[in-house]
Image (cartoon, rainbow, N blue to C red; front, side, top):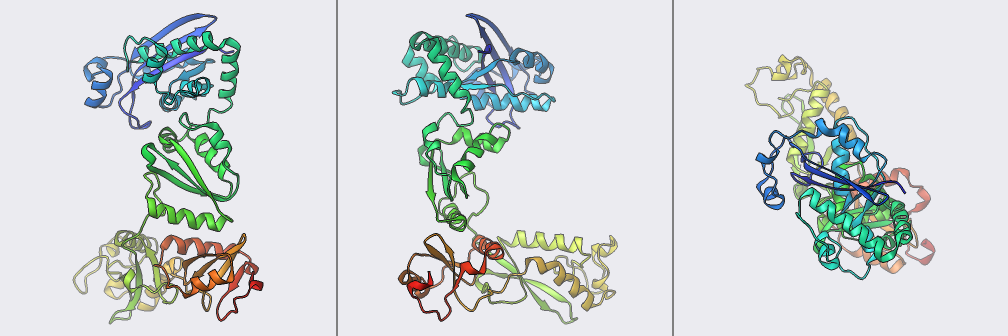
Length: 466
């Protein structure tokens, strides 16, 4: 087995990119012999008072100490070709990998997490944090929350495991852990292995059953594992892996069902790390109307004036006024449209807009560009975001698995497995328009076969429809 490096770091916080390392300790172990390396580092960023209270490391202590960059080569050589061992190793490894990357070094050691080792060898323990390990096994710590003190605890724990279980059992455990380093320390490998590789939605929970992240996939287990693999290189994934405490999943009959369920659950539970598919309360769209000079002018209409799927010359929708205005400004800049005509800039009658002075407007504001040409440019620019008219006479079903998903005017009505449930859904009032559902079904209709679509307009609902 390769030499071992028991590692602990102290930092200014938990953000790999924003925060920095203030102290590192490495205890190298080979053939029963140990060597120790420790150093304070000037993080070159502010040390919060809470961190100073926890670790005892103050700004004054690190003033004049070397920076990570100044000791990077020495640290890299100290860790090279050794198995990297740390408690909740993703944290220490993630910080060091990010720090080495900033100075142009690619840090890719084999990693062992002592949380996972403790879970594997002492499954009867309910908790496996460092304080519990110290108390349970009667270990001694000269300086808790200082790098060398905590690194020494890891060495003591390693020796205790070797003494209690034997070197061969410990080596076998290490071999097994090296094959599953992508799974977070707080998640049991058997749980991940039991996730089916079928379509569905997965839910990551943090402490106290807090919804952390909800996602979907055609292959659930593969997607979940990819989060943990990416955690070794991506900050967001690493942060999520550190916080996830439990995983649940819901199988669906296919890809469309997974997309729809993900959208629904994200809106219901608002997971802290989901940025897409959130609830939209200020839905709006642009509607074109002609002014007294014949120029088409966008006016913003709210969701109360929207009849999705039944209105022409409606562009959007957008999640709010800010997004709608930003999109229109971008189109004006890219297509030489007049911001005064578009209602984005106010000027005195007969005066040129600011864009005309910058030559990004062709002079519609002062009558130099005819309405027909400006209108054509505007409608061409907006075309890609036109709210599409519902292409069916009434409700449709998209077959998936043993039933079908019902839609009408871009609104999802529900899933039906038999003619009676179809009839019940058709007789219910339509739910509220949802922007994400609109995007999902619009995309899905482009790629699905017409043979998968059931038209329920004046249809006779019999079992033969399925």
